Length: 404
Ligand SMILES: Cc1ncc(COP(=O)(O)O)c(C=O)c1O
Image (cartoon, rainbow, N blue to C red; front, top):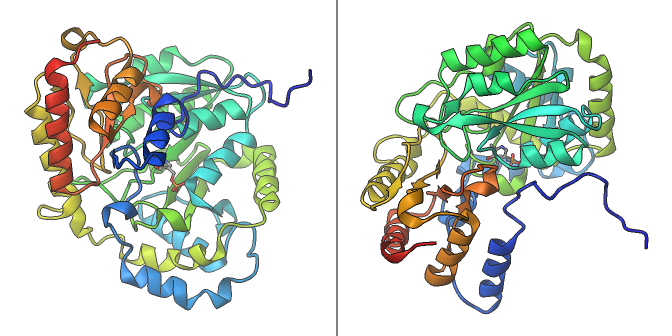
């Protein structure tokens, strides 16, 4: 019988919207059970609201946004994006090298589709934000995972990265600040990645959607600013920084040496035109959103919600025997480790499923981020302090007797 799948193998691609944990969560919800969701980085359900001016500007521009825009996006949005990234040393030659997207997600998929031939390899971090592995794979490429090292604050292991480069490697993906670890990479690490990319003529894909969510006074460095001579694509958007994930507002900035990428740019232009344009009303808010970028968001400062929730989750994890975690420095994720011996860990997905069934709390297992060892999971610490405290009390109780 004829089947209708791409020949691409998706079996080893994890995506947390699929699989037995989500099936069970959906079954529980359908039966009317209420579950606490610590599995998705969507600020709105946790009473994080978009700033009023964003809603006001979007409403004010609804009438202007009725038609399709230029497929790259409206000029004033791209001018604002160009200026924002220029302040971070990422120089787009013109606004023609900037594309708005229905979230960063759409642009990640487009950038892989336009680039990859079957069998091409892309270096993707482990743990990763799984959309990257999925996009590489669906485009016919192979995602080759380089290790980010927990013992070194989850920074990329440069020697591991180097050892995985072959003559099929076309690009390296750098997610900084990182989801799921919350790490922010220092300049020296970024410089080493740039050196490798230069040596092996790799494209750099920089996913920097959390760059405006750094804590502890950390100043974020854009990797493309260190690689003016290389072809780089930097991704960013407003889903997280302005808490408008549902409005789907993202962009990508192409910088560096464009000479060798004419064919690739043609492919990107074709895909961009094929989807006509991104949400036009969401493009209108970009210039307003990027006006206040240098003002630290109060939620990230002591006393602010994200900061205090980060402090709390670290403290609560510290208080659980057999659980440890590197302190996240940005975003709102933490990636704790379970003591493999103590809990007899063999299957992290089973752990998350068991916890969901018993405590009605939904997490994502480490394997969902292409982390190979069965001993990690991710907590989204967006829920308020009471909810986090309750969830971690349940975790403590659960782990008291848990053994696989
Ligand atoms: C690292 C990373 N990149 C990209 C995205 C996608 O964001 P968007 O809402 O712009 O599609 C996310 C969303 O969680 C993310 O964590």
